[in-house]
Length: 187
Image (cartoon, rainbow, N blue to C red; front, side, top):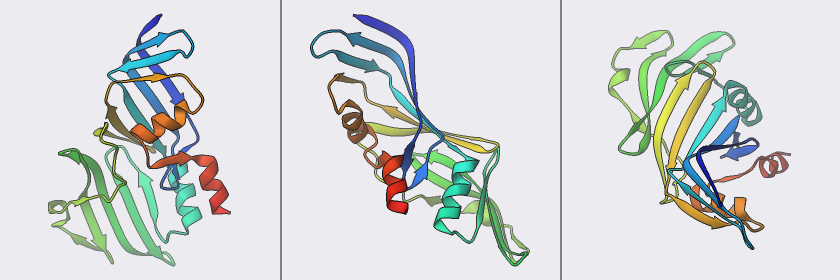
């Protein structure tokens, strides 16, 4: 039997709502491997860290032909919309967690160059896909060109058989699908 503390597994090529992630990391406080037929794995204190890079945001906006730009900064996400070089709208908002919900909290906003001084008073709950009951959104980290979401999972035990990744995906993050499925449907 193998017992590991601080185990970490990194994956690439996963997309959520057609937005590809730079990296998906599964970390665990304790990880147990039990050999046999079939072998078993167990995890205590598992969490997922989803990293979105500015390159993925830019590609997603290009593919969807969005009429605006998004820029990931160290404190917020900047939104910008221009019409032939004339600024129509600008906004800066941070992602935060409130009672387990991901919210978008405006920090500043402008429309046609006029600053909205009350923008910081408003917030909105983002219409994200429903998380599995075993998954909780517990952290958001802003950095220049990157945003990271942390999801805490229930402890689990699984047998190692074909389809393990799909079973875990269905249990903890059912709204994801492999990036290859998104790219096929985009063509």
